[in-house]
Length: 464
View 1 (cartoon, one colour):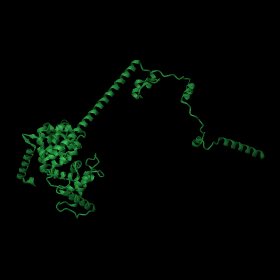
View 2 (cartoon, rainbow, N blue to C red; view 1 turned 120 degrees about the vertical axis):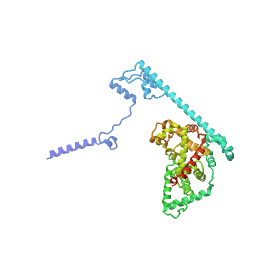
View 3 (cartoon, rainbow, N blue to C red; view 1 turned 45 degrees about the horizontal axis):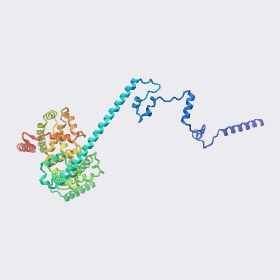
């Protein structure tokens, strides 16, 4: 029994020696990562040595590149894929280019480079022209500001109807004096003061507070409006403010002009509870806020909405609105007979597109800078220019509109192109003649209003 024990002991010692030989140091990375063969200590070789070893194994000798293969080194830039295909030889596994093909590719490459240079030159000339026009515009605006401040505004009562002022209004009032000119042109026939605005605003805040708490104690008996009507008006103001010039992000909640716009609209509902708030008012108030202080914007806003045309639309006086539409169609047929006939054929009536344009005074459908220029001339020509502008827009797109049906006409006029040029629009407006059978806008409108009143007197059913 001693012999087997001795053999077992010898085997165990041998196993222990083998095991000790295979166990590696715990700090060796290969063992730690894979539990197998440890990494050998290696030193980085020089790439040239590696290349020589590879050539020795494969039996290939390193050949010096041909002059054609050195094309890339002679270039001042790293060629792109297309350039590389033209200027460099094909890989060794592909047929070599012929001399004719090489010449053809080089010629094509030179033509492409020439075209790129031509486009770049054209783009540079365009940018230079834009810069020159911008500088010229800024210079003209600066000169016009001096004229307005030094000559016109100090003598407004004398010069407001002069030919020079009319021309300057058509060219566009400088932004630095625009608010002041608008305020003077709109006037203050209602004799609203800053103190009256503060009172109306305080009432509006009380109303908002009472509606938020559910109280009806502050109801104004003169307004004849229920708490539900006021709450609906308040909610409509909030909704409309969020949709007012959304791209500017200055009138929405949290924006710098949100509270100012909310205050003016709320104060107006208290000042004119018989009118209240109507959709579209927020755009008019917003344009005024961008050019005037809050109280002055409220004064201009209230007086502007008190004009006959604006009051007819915002009070939804159907009879008077139809009279305005009829007067518009008189000049529509006079200036654009082909488009007028097309609209009649497709039953496109003026209310489909004019309501949105008049309610917002073009501040919603047109770019803001263009809308401000229209306001500049509106302050000069009053309501007539709003309808003349409508005809100018229709004239500008006459060729497009005559190819559309009812639905597409409505959609197009509801959302006009965003890249409208001020010069194109005003050139089109200038071609519109507001005279029909030797009668101007005011005369045509007055005649239609007279006819409307006579019809109402003769037909009691129309009164009801």
